[in-house]
Image 1 (cartoon, helix red, strand yellow):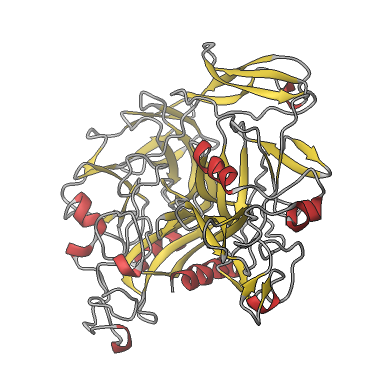
Image 2: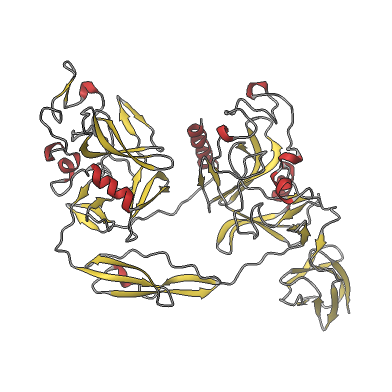
Amino acid sequence: MRYLKQFILTAILFLTGSISFAQDNLPVSGQIAGHDYIDLGLPSGTLWATYNVGATKPEQYGYYFAWGETEPKEVYADSTYKWFNADSKIYTKYNSEDGLTTLQPEDDAATANWGSEWRMPTNEEQRELVEECQYQMTEVNGVYGAKFTGKNGNSVFFPAAGGRVGTGLVSVGYFGYYWSSSLREKDEDYARDLGIGEKNVYWGEGDRGKGYSVRAVANKTTDIEEYVVSFYTQDSVLIESQKVEKGKSATAVDAPVVDGYEFIGWSDSSFTNVTKDLDIYAQYKAITKDTLPVSGQIAGHDYIDLGLPSGTLWATYNVGATTPEEYGDYFAWGETSPKENYSWTTYKWCNGSYDTQTKYCTDSDHGTVDNKTVLEAADDAATANWGSEWRMPTNEEQRELVEECQYQMTEVNGVYGAKFTGKNGNSVFFPASGYPIGSGVYYEGYNGYYWSSSLDEEYEYGARLLNFLEEDVRWRYSGYRDDGFSVRAVANGTSTSASTISNHALLVYADNGSIHVANAQPNMKIQVFDMNGKTVASGATDAEGSAEIRLSVLKGVYVVSDGNQSTKVVVE
């Protein structure tokens, strides 16, 4: 069900909105016999191909081979396996009689397809790959798999290509199986392989007749001319040194994060064609922080008044965050704490599956009916974490936010998301925080998913949410209740504990065709309206809370507002 759900949600996203991703580019150290390799700096010197046999890119699955066969085929079974006699049930090669435990070149799929300089790795070489590299389960160009990063900073990607059994293709996109050239000792039915799963990488073995992927390796030659490229901080502290073949490229390392500064590149970009030893230094520029208005605080958390008809006040950051651009925590719908794994098996309000719901159910086909369609306070993540004056918005309040505000997809302090601007000029930002399924987080930096407190009464296994992806913002959208989505809290506009930032009257006076403002919140938008409610001028206060706004019409009666307070002024 999890895999089906993930597939359906991904399909919906691609059908209902335009999503574009930048191509992930992985490093290449060079070529051997026309095929790319990467040097991961392994102790053995082993060079790994950057893509599977039968592929041309890291994310392509390529061919599947039975162990000891050199061509793909239609059916993978004992009856079609080259080295098995189906009548006698005996292996005809690589058995206890011939004593062969490692594939010979003529039976090596890498050698047969790519030439004598390439071969399948031994199981020890696969073990070295795992133990000497950092690995993570990730996606490259939209394809899930395992990325191994060597101590020299170079990386190689293994897609979760699944495997072939009979005429079928299994576990594609979730698991990967990669043959070694090593027979399993004392059991000729199996050969060793490298497996990748949803969370980890492991050594295993597979039935020799199954169809698995092959990632080739080559031996490193010793007569290569190399140079040393050293990366330093701006204060001349060594970050990393790399040995680079003449004419090849070094791999740029991650520059240290310096508070208040943005990394803008390296002092020397010539490490793309190395012909000498190089010392390269990180360069930075001071960051100018984006600031968004704050109307006040409720129970210690900032809110913004967007001038909505309902009077609803929106928090300026997510539950679990402290600034607008932080992602914060993720919650399953109706749960009040984040967790490691988001699935029906861990969901609080069911007995292990979506059709055994124990609360918030209106259909007996999905569990115990209680006809509750709005979260109770005890199950509201905003209330539970921020106090009784805060709550999760209803889906209607999310609808109001979208329909009553202008919105744009933008960045705040380098974080992508949706910015909503009310008719009073105040704005609130929702980061594209993605969402977790299982133990992984998807679509970070691309899409945003924000729970409402409203059950989806058409599909009881779902609840309503606010969703945005690129230029499309939708309020009437549904997500599976066991998924982890963000929560942006709201408060009622009549709350008596709302404290305005400026607790003094707004000071406004007119002079020589300009309106002067003082005693306002710093960096606040100021709007000037005529008596018909039309905006005639606008500006922003400085760090001292003051502003001067020039009028195009010098005489008249105007209303000056900073979003919290309004004052009438006569210009003569």
